Every structure is written in structure tokens, then in C-alpha cells.
Image 1 (cartoon, rainbow, N blue to C red):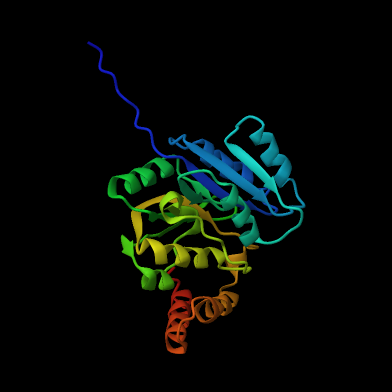
Image 2 (cartoon, one colour):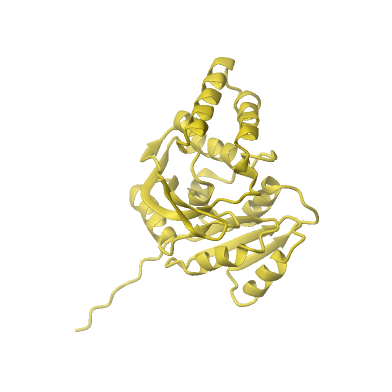
Length: 256
């Protein structure tokens, strides 16, 4: 008698991807989603007023893959606005985040969703590697912590393109409209409700380092962190000062 293997059905995942002038990278990023061994997904790409060929590239791919959905903003409004538009349109049980120049390993989604379903986790991330603008490995792995609470996330932001959270249980969160580190504030919102962020030690994402990237200026990030701690998170002067010192130390010694 033949053995019938029943395929396990997992909940759907909505992938949130803001795009702005990413014509050099967006096709490769989309292909990394199409290569996933997990197929219950939709990729919501929000173009934030690109002036290059980003829209044309996405449209040409979307014509042949109904899972790829394009939303176009009327004007350039920033990554936070673009992410919010994608989150609002998302229909999946889980929300996953992928920047327009980063890459997922083929088994990223299946391993992470299995990890979440098996353990009942609502908020997770993974380790990731770093690549240069041309996709060349930089031989560096950023390891995810096994378990982090709010205070840990204040000191160690998960890689944006590694994060997945259960929107069905935790709800949808609005990304704050700040130019830099808006994803970081989003994770701080999520963890207040989930209590913990659980990490997978295996690297499942490649983060691309770009010379023109918003996160490239480490000095300017200090000011954004200060704004986050004092004005958004309402932390004390002492705690905010400690956290800023911690981030500066990490930057100088390249601990992250």
C-alpha cells in the first residue's frame, strides 16, 4: 500500500517591502522571495515615489506572479509611510519584513514559521550575514539572541529583514513617521505586547551594505536614538544617557 504524505499547511505570510530607487537590487530581492520553499505568501511592495526603473521592474515581475503586489505612493514620503501602507494592505496571519536590497535564504520562511508555530512564539528574528553592494559576502555574521525582552531590544535592534511577528495575535502596529530607525521603534512597540523576541541562531538573511544607505551614517543615528529614548519611549535622562553610551561603544568597536 502506498504511503500518503500529507503536506502541512502553514498560515499565510505578508511580506512588507518599501522601495525607493532600488532598481539595481529589487529584482534580486523579489527572486529571493520567489525561491522560498514556503509558498503561502504575498509580497506587498510599496513604491515611495521612485525616479528610476524600480516600478517598471516590479510590474514586469508581478505580471507573472500574482503573489507580488505593487502599491504606488503619489510622492516620496519616507520608508515609514511606505511600510504603513503595506501593513494596512497585508492580509497574512504573519507579517514579515524585507528591505528592497536585502536577500532571504530559500528556507528562511519555512524554518522561521515552523519555529514560531512549534513553540507558540509571536515575535521572532534570525541571525544574518552581511554582503556588499555587489552581493559579495563580507564574511560577517550578526547573531540573533535566543531570547530578548524590552530592555534587551533597547540595546540590540534585530535585523529588519529577519523579523516576523504574528499580526493575528498581536495586531497591526503603525510605524512612527521618523526618517531613520522607524523600524527599531516598531520592534519596541511589538515587544511591549509580545513580551519577548525569540531568535534563530542560524543566519537566514543577507543584509546589503550600501554607501548611500540611510543607516550608513553612524553619527547621525546617535541623534535619532536620543529622540527615540527621550521623546518616543519616554525613558529617563539617566537611562537614555546609558543607552546612548552603549550604542556609541558598540559603534566604535564594531560590535554590531
